Image (cartoon, rainbow, N blue to C red; front, side, top):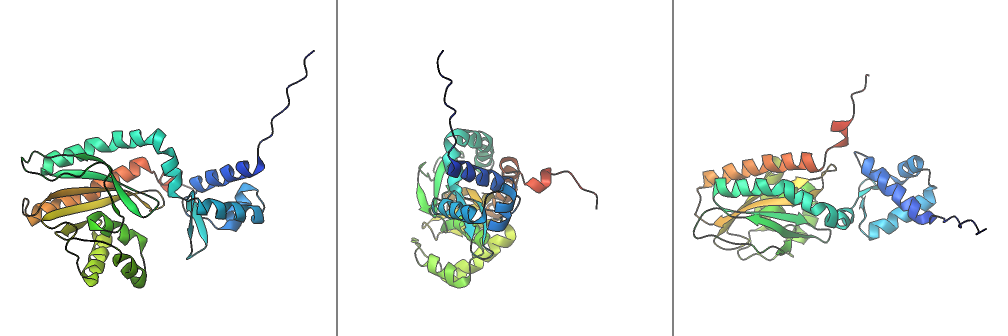
Length: 265
């Protein structure tokens, strides 16, 4: 008689890490160490060590202001090979529609975990003369119209926003005061525009798609030669980009509170 197969044992640290990630994914808001430890049944010291390790690897995001944790962008990057195509399948019809309706280049940007935005798709209008943006093009995350929207969601103190602004490279840089005011306006309006600052002679208008925790995940921008469209038409596109981004965000990243059944008081 052959011996019974040896039972394989799971690696405890891996099991704990997966349990923590699953818990954070199910939460509508960031969690502190004590809450994560309590809900997962992992000792606080072990939980803290695993969270800090995963923070350094960007699988978990740490908020210094209230000492809480949420899922990090590396989780989305790890899964992009599996779900990236489904994201594009949903978003591409919208950017094609916007490109045709507004007769300009519409670019889809992915917000990376290292402080950049990268073009992952684009669609064209019918203008004979038009601008182009190569898929894979990479820019600092706080520059241009998309960058103003991202900056608005980060709620950075003025000193930190100024520090990051000084690292940006524009062809025709705005003053910091102008940039800061436009970031604040983007936070109010839900969209932003850049008229000839990032690239001379180019107008961009953009909004961003956020996940269920309010973190920027994608940007959608319209890009055109300056003067090719009226200011009113640019503003109209900004409003539409805001609505499209919000709609896509709800579809890709449903908020847990919107799915939970109502409870009686």
